[in-house]
Image 1 (cartoon, one colour):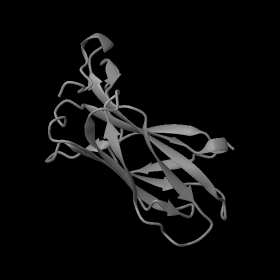
Image 2 (cartoon, helix red, strand yellow; image 1 turned 90 degrees about the horizontal axis):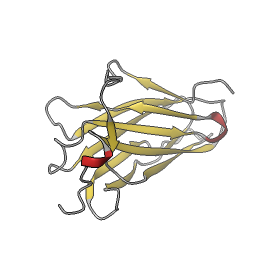
Image 3 (cartoon, helix red, strand yellow; image 1 turned 90 degrees about the vertical axis):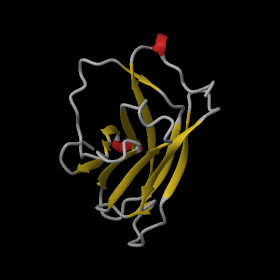
Image 4 (cartoon, helix red, strand yellow; image 1 turned 60 degrees about the vertical axis):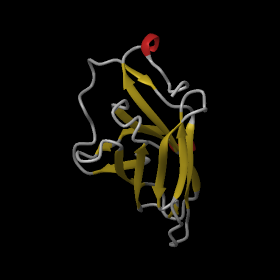
Length: 154
């Protein structure tokens, strides 16, 4: 069971933000992606990303394809609303694959569109394996919990 459950594809996925304090900006937003034995790729799945109170729409997240066999590359995209794209300084996704474990990945920010974040991951597992993986999205802002506005008044 020590097998890596998802492999990030591409360079520059990680960033050196060790010295900075990050505070979560969004609520408990997630998607479920089916890992199937069938060779058929499912349509993309998407969800809204909301503030910690759930009252403010901050953007959206999607995974394409939304279901596929192991060994498939999935594009993970987060689009932050224009009002918040300069506020969000980091985006991560935690993938929970049940018995296979949990792993967190950093998304890359587009240099031309600061509200567009993406990552390509490959599902890993046994041939014919079937499971439902949970992708939990986290938007982060620099600072500490005392000076963060989650957008409740915006």
